[in-house]
Amino acid sequence: MYNAFYAGFIDMQPIEAHKPDLTPAIDLTDEQKLQARQQCFYGCVFCGSPVFRYYFQPDSAAAVLICHLHAKQLRTTLLSPSTLLERIRQPFNQQRINKPGFSFDPNRRVQVSVGMNTVYADFVADSEEQYCIWVNGQEFFTLHAESGWLCFSFSLSDNTGQPLIRVERGELIQSPEQWDYTYEINTLKIRDLQRRLQFTAQLCNDRVLLTKGNFIDSFGDGFVVEGNRVIAMLDGQKGGQYMHRIEPGRYKGGWALFNKIRHPELVMPGNFAFVCAAKRKYSGSER
Ligand SMILES: [Zn+2]
Image 1: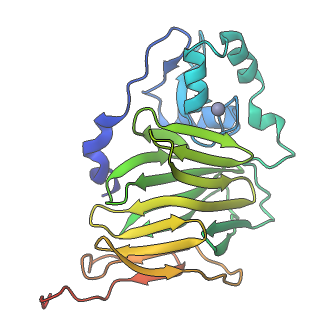
Image 2: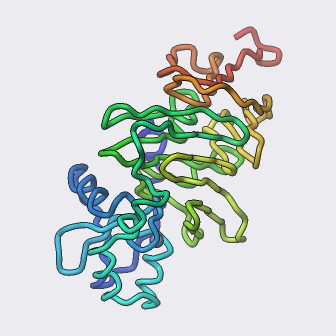
């Protein structure tokens, strides 16, 4: 269902310019991707960004993780190929292993905040997931614990529910061309062509703090996160606001929106801290 939803948009991803020094690694197996993530410590080798693409290392079949910004700098020769080789030997996230990065302490909870609302995620096993935003069966923001590191999957939409960005385990699969990605002081910011912020999230080893983004499906159901506020949307209309701080508890999920009218067959995975369920009647309809 997840893939089918996006199938029509795969072709929208920008084609990277070919340069001998920087070739997108598009046909990697899941195993090769996992290996590259581990070797690069789950981030861009230059800045540690948890959103990246896979490229072939110069003169090698192995892949390296490079974010949108640094791929651009390599192509425009703001960064030299020798700096790339240096960074492959010593990825940014390896150097900051004792500072906030993505390597998390399994004995400590990861704080997950969406707007003012907070849950705490416990990752006990080596490979686990926490659904942060879930709408009608579709995951919009998911945390994965993988070999002791955190990585992120998310889908961002515009305010009508058209998908704009898709990130899977850190890999930028779909994005409008020319959008701007920065990762500074643990904060990922995505800006559109007009330089307006479309996404802001602090992503580090003990805290995930989401303060900006539209997470809406093609029917207009979902959540809009705007600073402190989390606004639930149903059929494209504002359904209610969520501003609660809850006691730490064991939840396998954060924010779920569940439109029982449109999806009577759906079963929610896990145990969500916040659930918004649609019970509104369609006007003039007995459905
Ligand atoms: Zn980077």
